[in-house]
Length: 394
Ligand SMILES: [Zn+2]
Image (cartoon, rainbow, N blue to C red):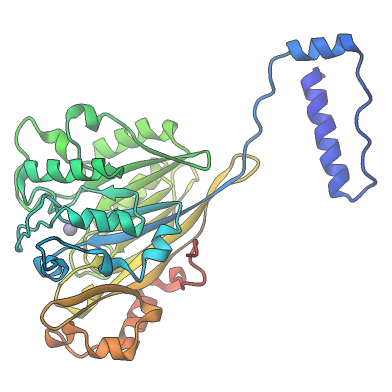
């Protein structure tokens, strides 16, 4: 047995003795000078694996309709979107990594449906809320053209936010999206099913990642060895559908087979279920098909219910990396008549008084707290979380 192995054996023996509650092991006797020198000449020990725990939170569509911007407008013409996020900020900012799907461009104008856009101050509120990773691969990404997308990406870059799914240049597109936390490297990829029929200009195909099975496979193959935990963001599915389509399920299984750890789905504007998938290599992949809207000014009751995903990524002493206690906390988008007071509340904090003032009752059938509690339970099942079981606490 080589000396370094002996040293390891001794260290292990010490640990076992301590664990067993035996009398403390006496320190090693002073080694002869000659042996010490030999030891120093040996190659250094491989570093032991550091156990780590990293909490991750993810939110769905930050769907900033023009009425939300109007409500955020201040007397002096500036915008303050921070009040929208004030009741979820504590949970988001407590996470080690917080992911958001930025549905619309933030190129500086107030865009009217169907070409959406919002002022850049919206990005300040997202940063203030605690987000640090933003998906830009959405069907609205090109609502203000490639230039609008570039302005949006530059805005995030200036604010130190990691963006995925859309890129400033071919060089930018070739840079892996990596984030380091507690010695663990997280890799991110993002794709959208399309861009609302707005063509991607020839020669600028790099600017947004479309869902393309061959590309997803080769991107995962390239990124997998560079990270410990791989997250794939998918802008997919059918709007207002509470269950995943066959295509979503088939894509999710393909992504699991490629070895991703987590799939974060969005776009249907309503919650869809989550599930564990087993990849071809026996790996476990957690998939939430849709987190619904984080905030919006849509006019149907189902679209007011969204979810905050939370989980803990754990690396144990043997170096195994697992996803621990994934689940979704239901959240409600609240707003009042005249497009006032847009706020996101955890469903469990939402009150009878607030729901009686919700403007969506003007457009859809009456809503009750029980309706949302039932809907959340029905869609999320065993993966529904409460503030108490949420992975990170404010
Ligand atoms: Zn969308």
